[in-house]
Length: 132
Image 1: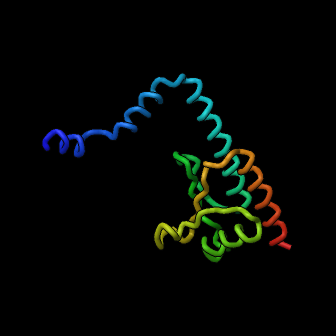
Image 2: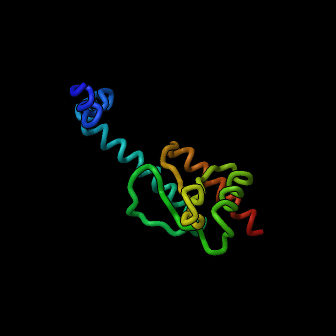
Image 3: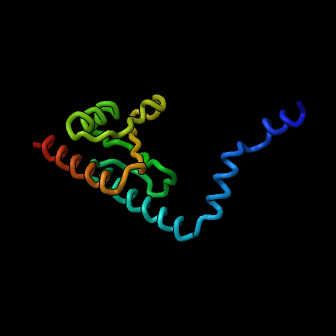
């Protein structure tokens, strides 16, 4: 019981250990390429947020970029509904993470750069049509 209990309390899950070994054995060039890939995606997300008038920090890390929506937008819920139904782009509304997130949206870097670029074009078209 002590052996099992100590592994449950402080041991790492074996598949996680094996994945870590693979990651550490992967050539640095692969990591550099992945970093470049995500940087390209991040730049497209920044372009989207900028044309929408959102404010955001370029110091964020991880797979998501958070942004504050412009004051003229009613709520993140209304904005993302418009983006989804009219531009056919899904953006996560901040309110689903609690009431403090109502004026925020979250965009993922998990899609390809070409998909994010397409989202940019769709949102740009939507913004033009909305302003007319």
